[in-house]
Length: 205
Image 1 (cartoon, rainbow, N blue to C red):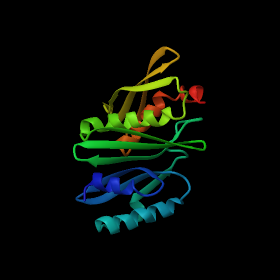
Image 2: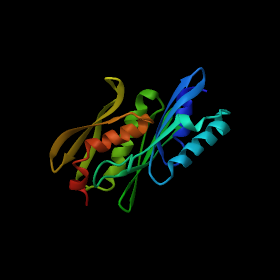
Image 3: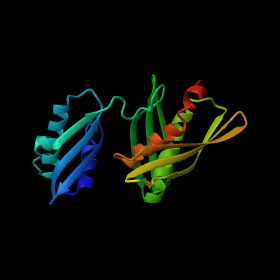
């Protein structure tokens, strides 16, 4: 078992936003979990222990698991959409990304398709996010993803999205960013939301 695969397994648990695992000799020695409120931290720890044993055959000492709960871990501050899901479907050389957001009583689902390549995945995530948001905004407003990247700044990987907004004949380039603390795809969705965080309330129907 490697740290990356274990982190991805933990991130599938309900309510878990991100996980970081530190290994020593093939055994986890530190497990850090970022979770949403709603489940007791002790239960999150038990879930991690059960998952590690069932999926990887590894017994985890509860004392090495730390849980941090942050309200709205995937919510952009204020009247902003919440990330519900980021999914991908691969069919041969084609990939389709589906991003699901919730905003008040609406479910916003956006899709984007392209070549099934690691170099295009995050751009498709950004495009699917923009397509989801466009459902809740004025028809005369158009969005386009200009560029995406995940550079390392200092010691941290950061998702960056450039989004072009065309509204009432005016074109603006907006830039957003988000730390990559778990799934890079979710970080890219947060980066797009950050780029548009001043535009969503203003353009809402």
